[in-house]
Image (cartoon, rainbow, N blue to C red; front, side):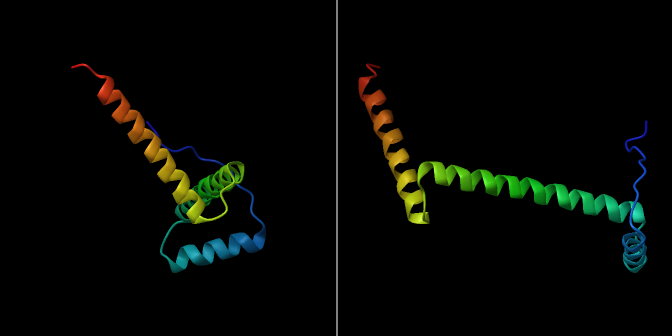
Length: 93
């Protein structure tokens, strides 16, 4: 069974020429070059969206510096530790 699906893509002439040139220089097929470019774009887009989410979350939490983040993490750790100690001391076993 085929694991790829052929598609048709229209490119401006100059982009096609450059794609062919780079494919020749790298001894690759145009398909391989375009497939790799698309993969790189999709990875870049995922990272961009993750950075955007991080920036929005930092704004929502009022984090301006790495120190702010460190203090938030330390406070969360302290709360978890206190809850764990409380749970352990309340456990009659």
